[in-house]
Image (cartoon, rainbow, N blue to C red):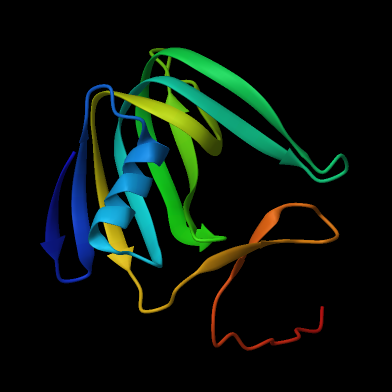
Length: 149
């Protein structure tokens, strides 16, 4: 992985064989990021995606092996119990231009990935939601705004 500091955070370039989520963890640890949002593009040859089923309160998972364009990667970086947590969603495209999307569990870069990390001045954390049983984002200094629907 290579990275450069810029006015809004960092530009990263992941390389062949790197696993995206682990690379994000190592990068955030190395430069001391406590909260960020990111987006990127690239290529993958292996990925595991998940879909959160609200009724069952579980993630259904599916593996993808082959050549895929990483059409879109977006997410945020937080911590849970002191551990860095990248929360990423992706859209992948195969040779037939068919797309697959979901929560990125893991993904291996096949050529490159180009990512912009926008660092924010809040230390984001995750905490398990007692009702849905997923780990939701918590930000400090948050204000609850009730919206009538």
